Image 1 (cartoon, rainbow, N blue to C red):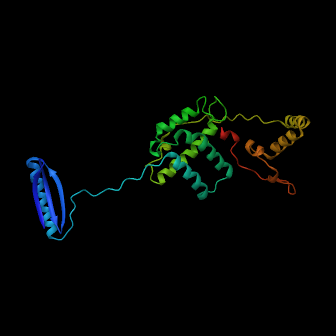
Image 2 (cartoon, rainbow, N blue to C red):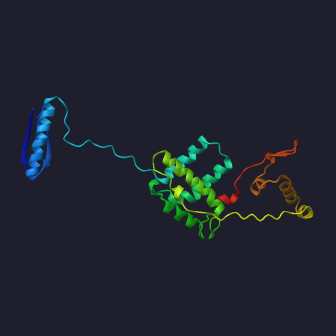
Image 3 (cartoon, one colour):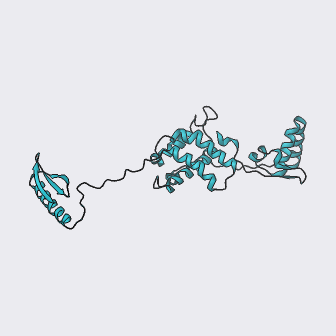
Length: 251
């Protein structure tokens, strides 16, 4: 066993010869480099005398896992979320549609860590501006659609937090308030409703039936327009009530 301090190429080195293996480590230059090399040599010699291992080079650190893109996290969420939660097919379709038409084109290829509060607010501003809608050229995306779409974004980022991709969900700090719903109810009188249903039936029988079902069932617009034959129990006279987001969600 041999542990020696030598100067080479203007620097001080520690050379080790131990059980047929040779190692060398550059320590430093000048007087300070020599003192550091001598101290290191003393410690190494003592360690070898005790039979312990030595490490001249710093331990190799494992390379951090690559940061996934937003698209990777979003696509995983679209697969996992319906498997773990009871969610209506129509709601899932709306989430998927908004993600594919709006979120992925805007955030998709960037790393999930790049999605900040400012970036999300820029996205909201862009969608509320002319051209924000993908369905209606030159039109802004409605706040109703945006509200539901941002819920999908919140859930995607929540999964990114759970999988340790990001430390916190930036949606919690986003400042956005959509247009409030205006409640200005002016119900039909009995005479008005009868006149409306009669006029509709005279103009188009199917339209008259649709309006009568709507008036007598109390269904929402999205529910009555989504009604299909299998939703009607003719023997019992019952309707299966649906809970669907209206088609404007896809805008």
